[in-house]
Amino acid sequence: MKENMLLRKLLWLRHGCPPHGLYGDDGEMQCSTCGLDFKRNKAEFIERKWIEENNPKMKEFFEKQKEELDMSQNFIRTLIKKFGSILRR
Image (cartoon, rainbow, N blue to C red; front, side, top):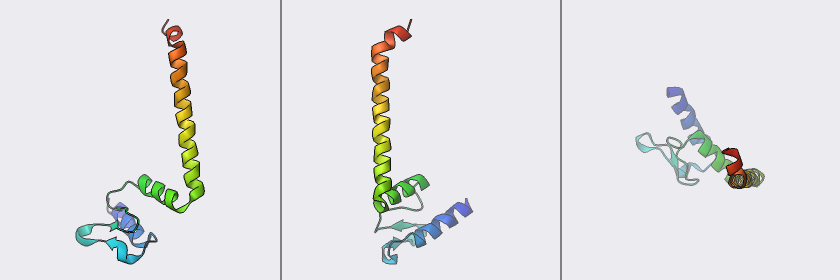
């Protein structure tokens, strides 16, 4: 746990936003510039926010993945509605 917090602190201090936006009183690790909370946010959330804000191509990739997933889920729902009675036999 200590190593995790140490890595979070280092990431918070050097994540690229100007130092004036960092808030660290009482053990906090927040950045008012990008809005991340390095003490509480999950690593996956921090990664996704960086990708979305800093790399338009990656943002586009994730949006496409979401659209494809939504289409797949809708297709499966349609199949279940259409063929549900056959499957229940």
